[in-house]
Image (cartoon, rainbow, N blue to C red; front, side, top):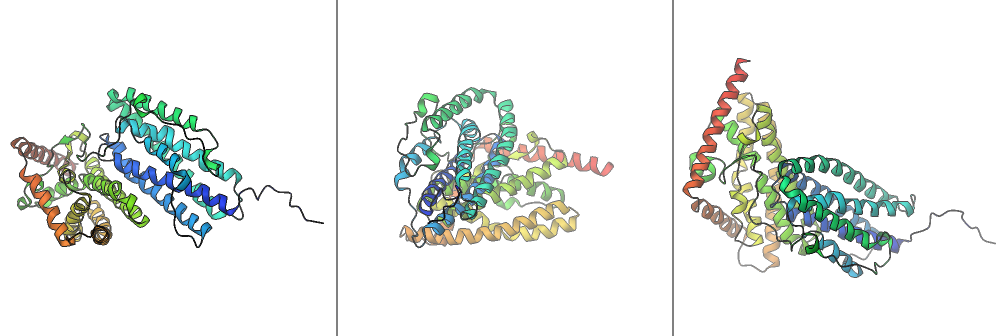
Length: 440
């Protein structure tokens, strides 16, 4: 006689679970790459702010999926795409959008829903007892996707209103992606080997081969100046005092979107051939810098500034356009390590000035930058050693500084005029708002 359990609990064995979760890991990782790659070219403001946050969330899920696969396959430590490479090749083709707004529409309305459905399919057959650690990971992933979807819906509605000329191409691309995923079939997520992977003709729905932008794109609604503040052009100009320092710091905070772009670009350029920890650190770095950007933007809006009264430029990201990926990493490290001392100083200055919010933001900025200098030191050393370069971290810092000096030297008369105009308009408006606040 035998005891036969009347249950469907034992539908997936360990090897099958590991195979499927490995597939999920690589798909999730590719989504991080895609979002990082499209960040610099994203012009629409709300979309640009969402990408760093969401790619960081996706990187966290990728990390947990990878760790779970290692647990299931212990002591095997290698994770390679293997037989999933045709599926990943198709997935990578989904980044070949006609422009950033189209990519965001496809991400929101096609790629993320497909991944969510794959996770749901796994949960439907997974053993809630034996495989419970996986359930926690996928439930969190689904929760993230649902939250992201709601926020993308609002942001992309704004994008369609501000940039209606992009809407047609975005919708054509989204339909093409949806059709491509439909042709893949509904069972790919749980197959041991995905045997039937259709081709995806990106040009037929308006797509083109993806290339990361080496120049930062900026929303047309801002007060545009490639060098957004006088000390961006000439550091000897100084940050000013009192009200000018408040406004200058808010300007530099909102302009830290360049650092989010650079961290995203470095991730896109280097993460595929680096240890998994680099992806995790770069994604967090990218998200942190977008938070610093939000700090400045939020202070400006709370003070009463409109978008067209906030100076926004791109020179720091643009400085890396013609150099190599490791030097781009050096550029962001150069700014972090050179100016980190100002964070603690201004935390105290703003507190003494009675500006508790600016002080609060600087305090958290400082905490982040201490982490970032560690990232920069660690990964510069790693990539230099991997490439057997003769340069050391100090050489990279000098090369990065040279890139920044070079772009400053290339500033035109029009650039200088735009910077001074932005400065004058912003300070006039700040004095008006400060006077109105005092009168109230």
